[in-house]
Length: 552
Ligand code: ADA
Image 1 (cartoon, rainbow, N blue to C red):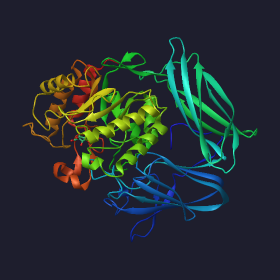
Image 2: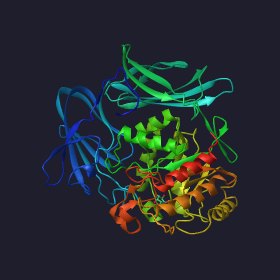
Image 3: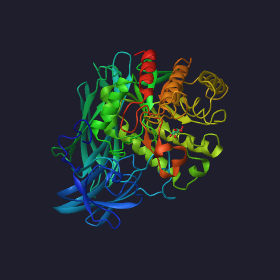
Image 4: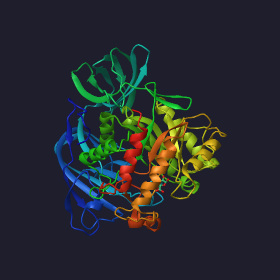
């Protein structure tokens, strides 16, 4: 399952989520299902290195392989010829092989999850960098010019909605072509007329579609519209299409409030890693959906995709179920020294560009985040935050931006985002009372360039080891975790000027081996459910507290 709906009716799209041959080290090659993580294969539970996935396919024409995610570095070969290279587990890429002969072709993907200087973002960390083709793969047969993406921005005009539309066309042939492109929705349409797309280049078309009678999208009433883009080339018949969805909603900032179609929001969310002991980071749709059903049961209304862009399928589910999403680029806890890795900037830039290209249309995404807990207290760090926010605004000015800071009382970047966000751990990493600590931090923010901006707590929580109970309220007990979360939620959600909270975290997750000393079981144990989604005592506490503060 690639998405929850079909993205093509005309373009042939072949699902390659089959058995592939897996070869690594001295082991005999064996068949594995794709998508998957190799840590789930016998003997590969902690394997860090390279492996090759191979698969034969019978096809001809312009072949376009689309990889939704390979963890974390991929080199793609067709019949022995390298056609793509990609870094980062959490964004998609394609591998195009034009004018292929109709026959059986061999696709090989060399995958690495190794840590080295080459990898600035996947490093030993407080979560696990898995290996494998971890998100779906498909084969498309595309014409010489094909529709690469459509981006849609709804704009409310008091009595109707406008929809600003951009469509990217890509010519992979050595000939110029004339394209006739149309966008159609139930509530409006636009024809771009004849446009030349020069050989081996891209062309972006823009228009504003007047949409009468569009029903607005709200989390409690998530109305989605399907937009179909069609393309005809050189006076021929329609030869390509792309279908995506849009929800008519605007996210705006008014003083200290975040407005969702004019209504102030209150976030009762969770930070969530893509992690599961049975699947690694390659969760099937049923497991993703189970997580969201638990969110709903917990009275939560939002998710932070800490600390990387998520699978589009998960975002589809959030769109349909009406969860609000903070999506962020891939970076966690990088010091200035790590941010000075020569690959850091380019890898961040690519990640942001691919995240926004792929996820632009999801109405669930209300905030773009960057660089969780990086060096926002240093001048060099500030230059990185500045550049990345500028990149985001150039690609999508319609959504507010933020970053989760841990540089309490010393952050120098609070002028840069639209929303000020902090990760705080009173009652866990220090024992100051929640309200006292929060008041102090908030007063300090009001003396900085963050003054008057909306404010979020993007992490708060405590560790609790599943099944470890003790009446003494010692740390690591389920009892203490429940106590701490109760105080923390109460403190944050009753704070004037605070638009909400993302609890750290939804479920326990595996961490890199290097993190064992502060992470019993080699897990981050701050989940309100354990890694198998079994509820801890804190589950009921959060459910009650979130229920008590629920306004929607
Ligand atoms: C940080 C970080 C999280 C996690 C958390 C913790 O604030 O952003 O990824 O490591 O702390 O558990 O300590």
